[in-house]
Amino acid sequence: MRESWLERFAETPDVLKSARLQQTVVPVLDLEIGGSEFITMAGPCSVETEFQLMATANHVRRSGARILRGGAFKPRSSPYAFQGHGLEGLKMLARARQESGLAIVTEVMSEDDVPLVAEYADILQIGTRNMENYALLEAAARSGRPVLLKRGMVATIADLLRSAQLILDNGNPNVILCERGIRTFETATRNTFDIAAVALLKQISHLPVIADPSHAAGLRELVPTLARVAVAAGADGLLVEVHPNPEKAWSDGEQSLDFAGFDEMMADLGPWINLHDMSRAKKEHGQPKRKSADTLSMEAVG
Ligand code: PEP
Ligand code: MN
Image (cartoon, rainbow, N blue to C red; front, side, top):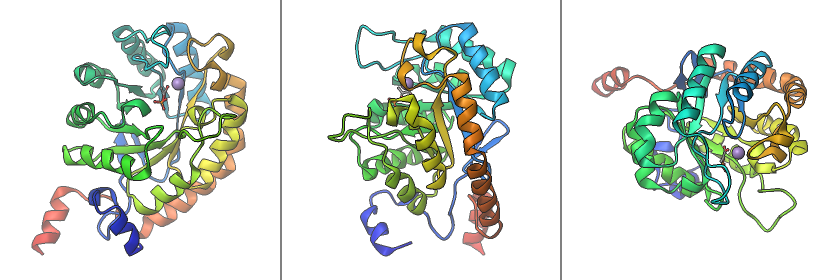
């Protein structure tokens, strides 16, 4: 890696690639995030009803998603908007996992809720508004669950890496970075999708990188194109909002794909994802993945 990147991100040495660690692979049930398989996480913004969640889970699974997303605790821009079903939502997610076999990623908003959410979720999502909530990051790290860390909407790449470093420092190596768009002067889209951040993070960090084209665009018609660009930039996977009836969604309907839209996007992404998986499998051949503590201490001794 270029010396200047090492210097520039010297504050966060453990998130950077090294001779010893080129790619972290995060295990989630029978999946690997950051491995050779591109992982699509899909589902509604909010868990609304049993029917909405089950229908979406079964549909996205058939179309190639590997992880179900859905918020039970919702950080809404308005205090009067739907705030999520909380525990009831977590229970619905657990039933959806049981029925569909998909792993679950869901947001945790408060330090106090970490033990509860960690009981139900396979991956804890830290939302954009909480990227610098250090008490929450520490609690999430110590839960032992993998953490999907969304970039703050006004956070630099260095800020994102600092929060990731904090999670590693608290004993949790399973951090997944997520680019979800940042605030700029542009208002035609909800956020500005920072594709250079995806490309740069893949070059300098060993942590898996997921792209969220839904929150980046804010408009469903842009989601498939941004998704394609993310695959081409080297992302390890996607986080996409899908709803059976986006017009009626309780949150983020404008950016949610309906089932047909999701199928179309997945079909369009197919050849790009195949290229991604093939080049990853080839790379994995010669490069060190994360090694177990035993192997590392043996190397230190030997
Ligand atoms: C979400 O994933 O629904 C969400 C609230 O995301 P963000 O924190 O990126 O706004
Ligand atoms: Mn949302």
